[in-house]
Image: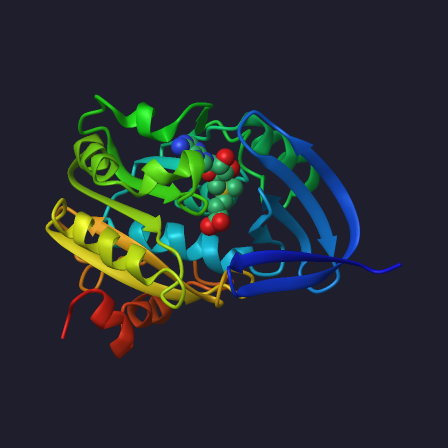
Amino acid sequence: MELWFTEKQTPGLGITCKVLQTLHREVTPYQEIAVLDTEQFGRMLVLDGMVQLTISDEFVYHEMLAHVPLHTHPNPRHVLIIGGGDGGTAREVLRHPQVERVSLVEIDRRVMDVSRHFLPEVAVSFDDPRMDVHFEDGVAYIVNKCGEYDVILIDSPEPIGQAERLFSMEFYEGISSALREDGIFAAQTESPFVNQELITRVNSDISSTFPITRLYLAPVPTYPSGSWSFTLGSKCYDPMLSLRDGGLAGVLRYYNTDVHRAAFQLPNFVRELLCEE
Ligand code: SAM
């Protein structure tokens, strides 16, 4: 009998794929974790019924979340990742030789354990000597941190449950304090087709905290609508003007300097969400 998995992405929209095998399923104190082997997308990490990554398209999301801010900052040495327990964002950050220390704050230790076992090509970096991993709430972690990081990346799930406060004004203010005076942060900020109110609110909150706020886009086929947004807040460097050569040509599958520049060119309906002309 064929097995199909459906994520109900909105009340009226879903993504359905054929499952070859359910590799893992468990309930932790934080969420249900599942790993499915799908015919179309390969292995898929699912939290509380929502697709977090698939082997076939995770490179787009992780490269764009990490490399856009890391190529904007001239010397990113200390990086903080909040969420991201699958390891994909850390893998991309550690490609930068300037990076001396990466702290990853994941609320659920089991996401890392399961990813190490079932998604080894994603969870490749946890044993890197530059990594330190903390299992706690990211909002609590940054309280009282002051001027420690060059770059902070928010690799969160949808703004539901324990992830909701990762999209709050209080959290953005904490990030701003935790960054150095020329620091940059970037967060995944959902779909411009199905999360329009969220994008408008988040952009307004980040704009009132950071002098430079830029939204950029990339395609992620297994996320709702397939079109994904990221929002970057910067104290000093504008990602549309400041772009260094990271020396990663030939290594990455999605990101390059042309993609970096193009990702900030927004269609009219997205400009309207940001209240831009
Ligand atoms: N790429 C993904 C996406 O956009 O769907 C996000 C993937 S990553 C697996 C998200 C991680 O954030 C999860 O492992 C989850 O446990 C973690 N998380 C959720 N809320 C958190 C919080 N408050 N502090 C730290 N980690 C959190």
